[in-house]
Image (tube, rainbow, N blue to C red; front, side, top):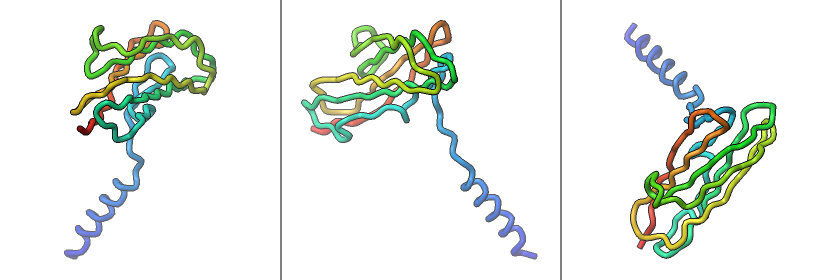
Length: 135
């Protein structure tokens, strides 16, 4: 009888590991973006490097999405830290649109890329991607 609680506990543990992990994504209207849709190059930047930031915006609906505003900031969401602001005129239904933004002349230390976006009149969403710059 002492094996039964251990078997039940092991079964519960294995079931929880088998369940898919939830990935957090930000959604504004039908447009989705998150840290998992952002790519930074180089992946291990050094001081003085230029960083290429590729952001994929996904349309979760079957109809086209129009007027998606985006803003990309260095380290904090502040007008003085704005790298780029733009508008994506259309993203096809169930489609994706990528934008590439550059952060030039990186300095050593811990940094964050902040991304804010809004589809039409839906509430805006903001998220960040941390990265380290070596000396």
